[in-house]
Image 1 (cartoon, one colour):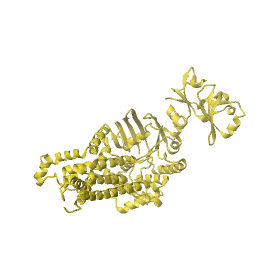
Image 2 (cartoon, chains in turn orange, brown):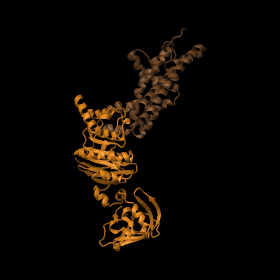
Image 3 (spheres, rainbow over the protein chains, first blue to last red):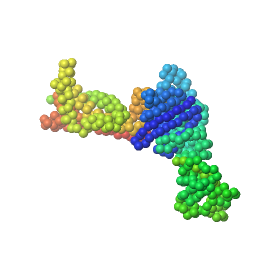
Amino acid sequence: MSLTCNFKKKLGSFTLDVNLQAEDEVIALMGASGCGKSLTLKCIAGILKPDSGIIIVNGRTLFDSEQHINLPMQERRIGMLFQDYALFPNMTARKNIQTAIKHTQIKISSLELQKQTEQLLERFQLLGAANLYPDQLSGGQKQRLALARMLGTPIDILLLDEPFSAMDSFLRWQLEQDLSQTLLDLGVTALFVSHSRDEVFRLCDKVTVMSHGKNGVLKSKHQLYQTPTTYQEALLTGCKNLLPATYENQHIQIPLLHLSFAVTNSPKDFCYVGIRSRHIIPGFLVDHKEDYLLSSYTICSETEDVFTHIFMVYIKDISFPLRFEVSKDIYEKMKEYPKILAIKKDEIMLLIK
Amino acid sequence: MTFTLFPLFNSLRISSIATFLTFFLGIFAAHYIVRLPKLWKGFIDSILTIPLVLPPTVIGFLILSMIAPRSPLGAWIKDEFATTLTMKWQAAILAVVFITLPLMYRTVRSSFEAFDQNILHAAKTLGLSNIYIFWRILLPNCKSGLVAGIVLAFARGLGEYGATSMVAGFIQNRTATISTTVAYYWQTSQDALAMKWVLINLCISFAVMLTVNFFEKRTAAT
């Protein structure tokens, strides 16, 4: 199974420009709200019509502006999981599934229809809830019903539009586990839209970061999380300290922090540096001082989190706050040492815009 | 003159038939207009809603000029059926349809617009036909809006006076409705009879409002 998307769509002053290729895998479209990730899904599903370009799923052309192909939503064979699951409120769980099966398999006998419906109900542990209406179902049951209903129809690709955004964190975990298992069982190409870096990392194989309507290079999640290359990638993977930087005379300069350090081999193009808050550590933990940038700091604010303490600090009296985080046992020891922080030089990420 | 219940029967008959027609016209208009581009939407919406703010006599006048024997439509009816529409109770149906369509259309449209569009999108991605989606998903889920529209249209139809009296006039046992009967008795100083019909009208209106309240409570409870 495969997906090829290459299309543009203008909406007022916003331009969506998507270029994406995927095989049998779970792809995440990650981005801040308003970056166009949900619009992308809408274009693939046919809710919105792109201005130009192509959308091909499994060798079937769903949209091609040059050949004037624009398949109706009904013929696209797309399974879309909506944020609020979009179940039919006037039908029981069983009827929700039946309706979908009946309409995609026109000649199905009533016996076969019943059999398939019961199979799906059983597979998604919905037998006990079969006669309930959507507003009587729990969040987990709703999600399972939405998936079951979808699987009653032939689908080539699964589109998931922030499926957990309406859930509280407790419920979220269980739903995520269920969904993850279903995705594995199905083995179809799935496109998952989210702004949560943790969800994306746990559920997906590959990630593309979207910003201002354009998607970046598709990367494996490990590659993206360990070595982000753009400002947006670093930001979305949770990097808290992002600063403009330049390269001059074999030195990387970070003007906002009045810091500069020498590098042996000249780096590729970059205009930002990213420093993860866990890569900033108290100075007393450092053995090889030459590998680190060391600086004194003053605390601007201090927040106690569940397992860590988060500091916002100024270094060298410059009023640009850096964020760093230490575990609680280290926090206790810090009081006995002078206020010096250390940043490992090779953990500083060089980023393009 | 003997007292007959004909005006009550006639009013109910006109309003029921008109509401039936308005219902279908209203839901189709609402369904198609919701999906039109903005500019067209505003334009057609204005045309459909204008009877709400026009004096009923203006509507009556327009309908008369449409169905008068001299008009193309009137002439055709005269040729085909050897009859005229004016001064017939059937003409009042036309008047009531024009007057009640905006009410029906507006109420239904706002309930269509309030309905979660994602459910319709989901239905389409599941392969359900547009016709099925409209009749079996959109309409059942907008039931309270539809009922509100029907009740409003029916009640407004029962009370219609201006346009009805212009196109159907007041002919006893032929075109008389409750409202034209009240006007007739009052004009001819038969206040006791007028009062009788006023009371009948009050009873009906009260029943309608009770129905509306009942449905509102039920939708609020769910």
